[in-house]
Length: 159
Image (cartoon, rainbow, N blue to C red; front, top):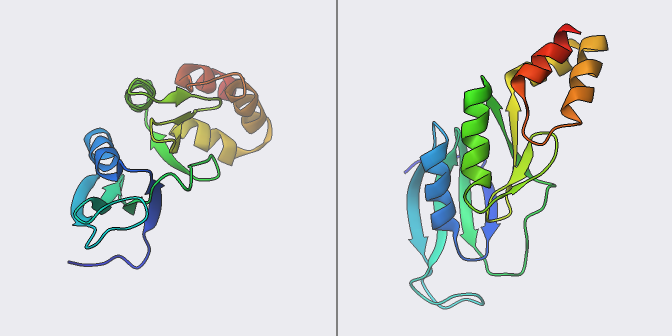
């Protein structure tokens, strides 16, 4: 077993394994690895409960920790998933929002565990990198959206 130098640790109340399996079923280059059970009772669980889950989301190594209700997720942390077209954007958005998640603005949504996701088409990222009027037009278009509309961003980029 190789332990990555840097791992994102995500605190879950009790569903780290379920979340990891959900992510692995949606995003490419994602998987569930080792599942570790608590060797003894702890404040929010008992010996034998799933304590941590090693998993990967779109190539990013993560550790899911079932730590109980003490801490909640916030938008201060999010995964940003770059998409190639409207079909891919819709697929990820619908998977997250359609399985107990919540829509937000500007390509942001939350899954049912409270983890925030930015489902961001590459065309929007490219427009912002271009700067100037192209970035302004794409940004203004994005500000009116929940799920990003790739066609509308492309039209805004062209002016």
